[in-house]
Amino acid sequence: EVQLVESGGGLVQAGGSLRLSCATSGFFFDDYAIGWFRQAPGKEREGVSSIFSDGSTSYADSVKGRFTISSDNARNTVYLQMNSLKPDDTGVYYCAVDRGAWRAHLLGSRYDYWGQGTQVTVSS
Image (tube, rainbow, N blue to C red; front, top):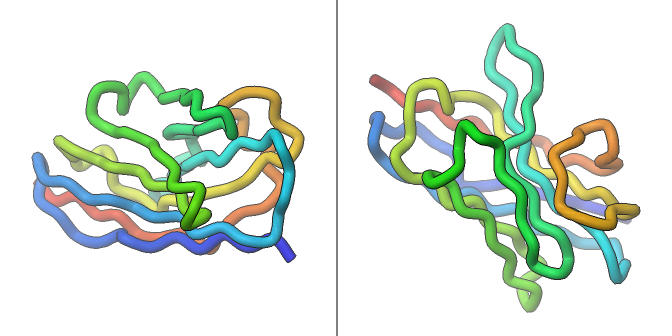
């Protein structure tokens, strides 16, 4: 059974940092992508960052230079380091897996398993 469990969310002041974790289990494919997405109240879900199984990455323009995605294959965990946080970064952050990926990407409809989400709140 494929499982993804997010953790690390919380309340932080603008300019602060958080590190989100996505613990994965249950899938064994050579090529896959793990993505981070977020959804703010009243807004559509948006892609934040993605990492492909070869280590290549993709970022939304709004987070480039502030967020860094990485993976620890030994721990089956993907991280999202978020620095210089802004109130606009507030939302529920989800990780997801695309088991048929051939590159890192932020097309949410291609991701087939999702975690339950973790809340990130950035105060001004």
